[in-house]
Length: 72
Image (cartoon, rainbow, N blue to C red; front, side, top):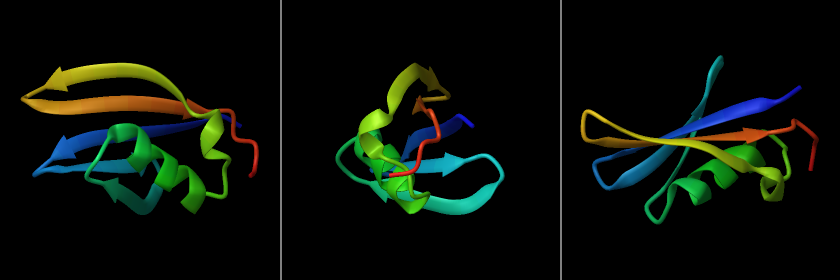
């Protein structure tokens, strides 16, 4: 099952979340690295992440990544 990892930039940090899961992952360098950290927390192979969407909403950079859901 595909997994959607959403990241947002706030107060100097990229924070990654997954709907329905309370865990978060963060990184100060990039949205991709925050999403990769979240994928690892979920037991997924971070190299399979694909950037889907990049938005600037209310001054907050938001990036969405998808993963096919295959375990690492």
